Image 1 (tube, rainbow, N blue to C red):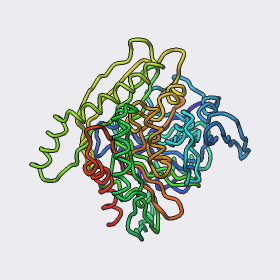
Image 2: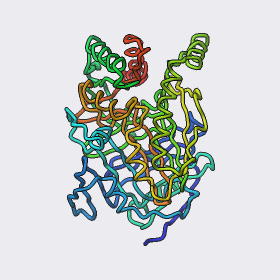
Image 3: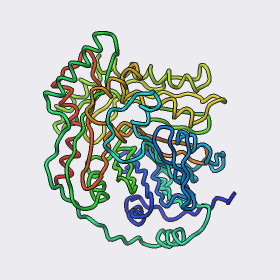
Length: 449
């Protein structure tokens, strides 16, 4: 096993500037904390050119190493576990090499034997590269850190770049060439809304997270679009991923799973109000959110669901709710956020936990499996990466993955993005529909500039 090399450079606070140097490389990834706007977020992680690639759908996996491709009948998560070198060395770093990638929501349907009615994106449900190097920006310690196993031309170029001023010629060409379209009319949304409320009345479920998909055409650079969107749509669990099958732009405020050693945490979001520049109106929205019995009931329902998910993989009695109904403000919305923590049991691991908690309960509804069945019945198209998870599983036994909300993908000069919200018996169709638009308005406004 190669020794891990660690080189520290002068602190750079702009990970996007560094990522621009590798953006067009193979499977280039940026995990972006937007620390300037969210100072409690510490790390950005950049890498490309993975030494192994693991991707697939359901139990059909493809494994690529040294340009040799193998087809394996197994869940890609299992293949990933078999190809990771987990240890506890260098636990002061968030990432020392390992897996970075995503799980699509659609993979969750395969876990629950739900026959997905559509699949109009030609992309895998899971894709993780195994990377033997990374650049880490530690915004708390004010350090730029390069970790790598083997020195090659790319690493030598990075050392030179990081030792000097990085001069990048940015491609700022991005133009929206159409108005946005939804895959649902309001009448269709209202019809599905009524079906959901009947399911709730009949006792099938308590809550359904229902979404609509939007799309528009564009010309130019998706990376330019991501940089533009971060100006007004930044979030603490953002990401940009350049794959041959799609480019992923994520601006998620929600942590799905964090893990370090035997400690695990999830931070579900349920409850939303818009942010207003009018301070009087903004205060009203905050008061509405903090006193809303409906929003708190939704949040508590998901907290209980996630406590149950954790309970199957954590030591008995270790699962606790450390924060309940905390209000956090993001670029365009206020949210109610809770925190569930636990101690992972000795007969489990991050891979088993990820598999058995996926997809996150905050974006399905409750009970989870029945909610997923209803979502599959009523949503017009498959979700793809939306409501899946993006993040890393590091060799040093640490992980951090988000819930891929506020997420867009680009395929063939079209951008696809989603807006959704939780529907309960107390919901009103027009208000829920408006909430989906509140969540995408900053994206649309930024793209049109």
